Image (cartoon, rainbow, N blue to C red; front, top):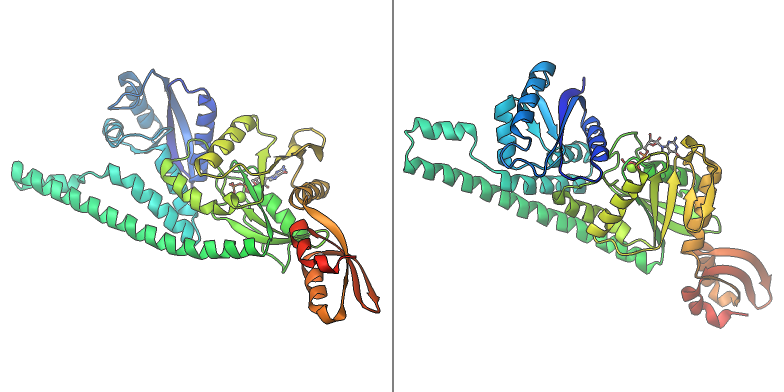
Length: 417
Ligand SMILES: Nc1nc2c(ncn2[C@@H]2O[C@H](COP(=O)(O)OP(=O)(O)OP(=O)(O)O)[C@@H](O)[C@H]2O)c(=O)[nH]1
Ligand SMILES: [Mg+2]
């Protein structure tokens, strides 16, 4: 199916990064299987309350609609219902605002039950203040003869629609809560087992899923599944968690998360909160940045702000400057907690894994134990969970040299030699 041709419009109201936000809009448009055939922008002190653009620009927009034959207009901002209606009346085209566009992309991509429910919730919350009596309902009223009584009927219909949406919101919230209760239990169990967790976070299309797949194919246990990678915004919507075994028998759970975009609709922030619970819970964040993108600093800013907005606490972080193969920079190149790398380069992945290991297992200590044969299950335990570097069988028991967290070592103190 051919992408739908659209006209993108944007208003520059003292926007410090206006060009970048328009560029991002183009990509969002592509991600929603549309293509921008023309762009119209205007600089104003404030948006026109009724029509967004000023009068002259609106006429220009109408001409552009007629000239290009495009039947859809995509606006770079969230518009009020009356702005949408007025532009639609003036141009005879359908208007989608930035929030509606992002919600549409999410709705088309959501696969798991949780993602679907979250998008549904965000859509309902977007619709609620935008309810109006439909054209056909208004016609019904006119046909019935107008007057006060009929206005009353219209309001009742509106009230009914509003209550229906409110009921749906409550229902979806309940369903989500049930699902999330199950997740909390899982993540609590992980915490009890002291399995370390890392979360890949960052701007959409930076390469998080590609890095995840490299980690999984090199260090995944139980033939863990690959995740979906594509060169488009919002390829990943659901968090996927994979079990890794890093060199030295070090168990790590890695989660690949949804990417961020600037001006994320507030209706979706809550959806992100739930999806990113894994990240908020992680021992370490890996922020992935597209090092080949000239807007990388703005993207990092967006990531920081979004993490804050969804309530992720200040966690230890490694910053990965990815796609260095496209830049001519040397890689892998590490400076402190920063790593310039390419997801396609095995040496880069090795370096990243070394950094992850150092960060996560900094509290590891090396101990030597003599465990009596009567406590043989402890030997199995240590072998299964930690990095056993040497084993010797002596008359009084098994002698083991093992690296393990200081907090766990306390449990085995009595066997230490
Ligand atoms: N040249 C190059 N391309 C890369 C590298 N890492 C990822 N890519 C490409 O970048 C595109 C996006 O990669 P993804 O891994 O899907 O990005 P993501 O961060 O998971 O994106 P979202 O899921 O949308 O948030 C894909 O076309 C990848 O093949 C890299 O190191 N070098
Ligand atoms: Mg992804």
